[in-house]
Structures are given as structure tokens and as C-alpha cells.
Length: 234
Image (spheres, rainbow, N blue to C red):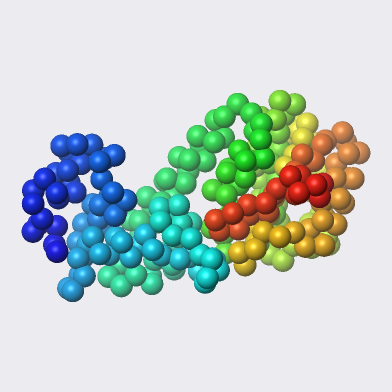
């Protein structure tokens, strides 16, 4: 049913103005952003389809959906929803990126990364949506406050493609007391490989020479993250 045919108090815009944004469902909020549907598909139906979207980086059987999943959707993922032209895709990607940045800023503003969960949450926002493998480092001060996050290496990550010297130099540049290593697995699995474990030990040894502790190595995939410290692999 077109939005204009709904009772006035059920139309998303009027409902939002009368009762506040919290009164709207996820689909209604998306419908407001999309504004119009297409022939044979109302805007609310299109919004529901978006909320069921599985990203190209997620496993076909274990994919995730809803607003959390949509936060990790790319412009190419959105092409799979019939009726989303370039203008609507661009608007959605912009809004989703703003949401990601706002959440990341809130997490970064926390005084301390006191738990693995706080770190995993932050890294999920930063790395989970990337379609290629990225190796990043969180540089922390003596109170585990975030000084900086840097993506240092891209592509297939092995012990030979991640250079300990570069990680050490960046740690010295930031005057870091500790680091959290991180990389993503676009394939969807967060299980560490033997190469991941070997790389972690190599970097731990190199950073120990300048008295910088490796607190964790977090592996991120769409919808989940694994802490090697929590698994006893550090």
C-alpha cells in the first residue's frame, strides 16, 4: 500500500512528527529515507527487503540482516534491491556511513578500552564491511586510551607481507605503551589460521624490544569478531 493511502496517523512522517522517531519501526524509518517505491512495490516493502539484505561479504547461510547488517552494506550490495537507483543508493550509503562514523566516534570517546568487547565493537565498525583484507593497529597509551588507529597493510596478509619494522616505527611515532593488532576476514570466518598465530608472535617479539605490549589480536568478519587473547592464543 502506498504511504499516502495509509491512515494519516500511521504514515511514517506524520507518526514521527507526532510521536517522535523512536515510535517508528526500522522499516518505517527507512521508508521515510527512501520516500517512494516503484510500480508493484511500495516503499515499505522496499524497506523490508533492505532490512533482509545479506551483504556480499557474509556467508550465504549464516548472513546477518536488519539495521546492524545494513550498516555493513556496500553500494554494490544495495544494487540487489530492485528499485534502488543510483540516487537512492548514494543517499543510503551516505546515511549509513554517517551512522558508522557517529558510532565509531562514540566508542573512541570512551576513556578506556577496558574490555575485549569494547575493542571488538570498535573494530567491527571500522573493518567488518571491507571487501579486502586489511591489517590495522590500535595504538594505546598507558591507560589503554586510544591514541590512533592505522590501517598499515592490505591484501593477502602473511608473515612476510606485514612488516614488523613498520609496526614498530608507528608505535614509536605515537609513543604508544600498548597495541591491539587487528585484521579482517572478508570470507566470513573469524577462526585464526596458523599464519595469524605466527604473525602475532612475531610482532609481539618485535614490539617487546621497545617495551610496547601487544594486548590482543582481533579478527573481524561481518557480524562477529574474535579476540585471540580471550582464546588464550596470545
